[in-house]
Image (cartoon, rainbow, N blue to C red; front, side, top):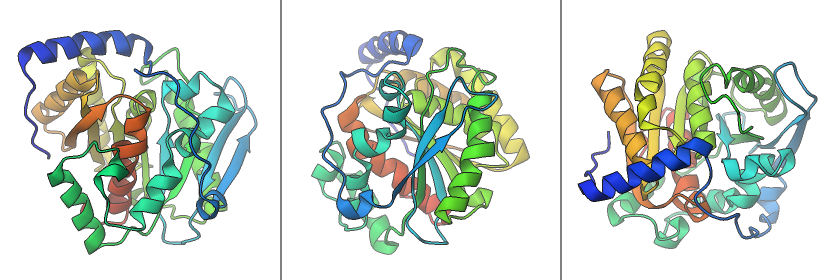
Amino acid sequence: MAATKLLPLSRRRALLGLAALASTSCRRSSSPPDPAPAPAGAAASGWKDLAFDPGPDSEGPQRALLLAPGDATAPLLVALHGRGEAVRGVDVGARGWRDDYGLDTTLERLRSPPLEPGDLGHMVTRERLAQLNASLAAHPYRGLCIATPFTPDLRDRSVEGAAGFGRFVVERLLPRARAEGGCLAAREATGIDGVSLGGRIALLVGLSHPDVFGAVGALQPAVRAGEAEMFSALARRAMERRKVALRLVSSEADPFLPAIQAISDRLRQDGVAHELLIVPGPHDYSWNRGPGGVEMVLWHERVLRGLSPP
């Protein structure tokens, strides 16, 4: 588990106030992103558009993008976007990781190490950059199948409220992604992650289905400190059924940091194995395009291939 140094009390109090305000609406802390550069031709050609008719648990049609590297040994990652994309509609949401968060660029850099500070938006410590590059030197990045569905801004943000979306992911998205992407179907090769609103839902869905997901991550999840007991109970029940690799990632200027630390503290108190990683940076699109995407993809690719993560 990554060791972290607590922030000064005045700074933590200020962040607590920001977290309480932000988690009420699960809003992004920045304005909408500038248009992202067009994806590189080779990477863009690997994306497939998946459309789904309305199901019993959805309010309308669903959509996802699927990136399949054409490798039958590739694990599958479900990546959920934040609220900024959710409020802009199904099509924008499904394309969020590719178009707004620059995932193609992230994948290109992981395939051509070593990473440099600019590849993470200069939001990386020297020590962490060395760890990432050591991992890539030991085991070159081999790729993932990545499915990026539209992530709804649920009115009910409880475990029960996320159950319908969870059924869509488990019963409709995963089987189709595996069939059309040719990726592995084992739970040990299946992960879920997301950022902000998507990080919260990734925890709710992933820990509700430990028989489906071998790895569950959350980037700057939109959570509240008062929910620590709820998330810990959910994680304990999951771990009693199947062991799940669990990681929480936040950043020094993330308004949800105090709440994420509170949840990590409760998980540790309750004996739930997990990792907490805190890196530099704010809660905004530049972070998603830098350390957010790199940390998410590389951690899941390592864990889901049975390798040690950096």
